[in-house]
Image (cartoon, rainbow, N blue to C red; front, side):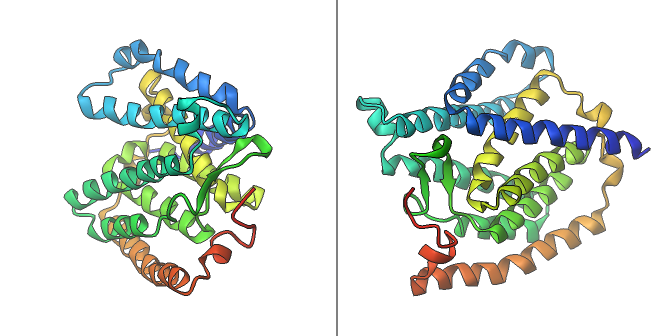
Length: 274
């Protein structure tokens, strides 16, 4: 299959995704209401051929938390008062975002295992183990856009990106190019900002945008079909490399927690409060 459509479509899509991250990060209030509006595009999902409870559940399991992220940002940044607002801005509610990330990784990890992609599945399991705990390493800032912050490290972000890309390569080769693009956007945005803790925010908005677009106007098989890129040997080697890189990171992560160095090493000495 010709590579030139990917050379054109992937950079264009990457640029759109980078704009989406920046726009919804800066416009925290609009973000909450925009993603609510996206729920009402469901007739397009039906027309677009979204079938089966799993795909519907997948879309909703991303959109609803994205909406909740928006309202939690409003609650904290504007210091809203009221029973629901107080709940949304409580430190304990940060466990909700931790749990969503944990379950998102675990879901793909289980699917990886069922496909026989075992080393990558083990990598996903260890990624779950090394998610920084809430609420200590999670917060919504009270300045600069009310950012959702998760103190993942640059290494964890890279391992997540490589693990998830390997998972998509095995599970949906036709969508690999488009999924790789959204993963790269989430990876590169925090690098540009020199703030690895923005990775989860970038991941939230790129994944939500991608799933809505794919459900409503699924043009990716036409413009970014990567099914011809699949190679079982590459898949096995990729998963093995991910696991080999993940093991030392696991020991480093646990050592940071054990020695009490994590408050500085995870946050890059930025401090635990904003």
